[in-house]
Length: 372
Image (cartoon, rainbow, N blue to C red; front, side, top):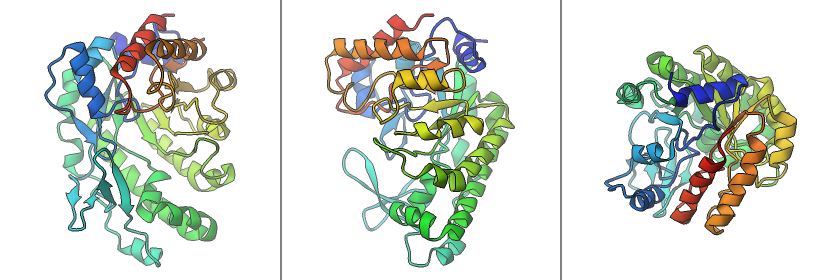
């Protein structure tokens, strides 16, 4: 077993590895905008050709292998695609596999059209054409990619997106979906069951093909804002938690660890995440209310792995000098790595406005303080 795979296995089993494992782009939320990848390649002296962009809406990359090797990343992403490429409509929007329309602003793709944002959602749901969950396009090239890694790294399945909360809000429209939870719980349960059923079929199709090679399955559902939860804990426990639990149960049939990405002030739900079998939490948004690193580590350390939280990517990484970046990384790592249960990554994707010197300083500081 390679060091990259062994380190993260030790973290999940409660043992101390030789150093804190490093994740760069093992998941969609620990990677970087393609403009940052280009700048990094140039700064490190790697000839740059083009980026591998799979998360089209965010314009983030599967990082260049030379960057991952240079900094010693322990993870590699196994990123499934949608059922087919996006299509440009006559209205100038770009439509994904679900029929969600987005507009490109030169930097990102922003949602503008939602297929079930209609007056009669029940009828629309009965007629809705779900994308093919078993499309070969989803997994094209992944077996070859897995083989190329030859067991050297922890492989993370990515691309399942927001399976129980985010996706239905994108299909229905965020405002309408939230209102449905309050005004039409019967329809909401029906809709959420359909979404879960489709996501389970995608999961089974992918895992039956490549699950023997996957170490960690990551899925997302953003449940927090900067200051609070998006929905009450009671609403989460009625509508989302049972479906999260079913999804986690299915993942664990394949012998994989489960990583949940949920942004924002999600501390009131961490106990629920632990209860349903979530093994690790990302991005650990330390700038959000209630997400103080010391308090999180004291209350939940040893019961859930913190995957992220290395440095705030909103107000710190893009805005301070490199020496301040190093100090923030040192401070957060001292808290999170104590006793194990920690995998280093910045809080979220590295955006185009971040100075490349700060990116390098972040990873150099990680390296300096990663040893146990």
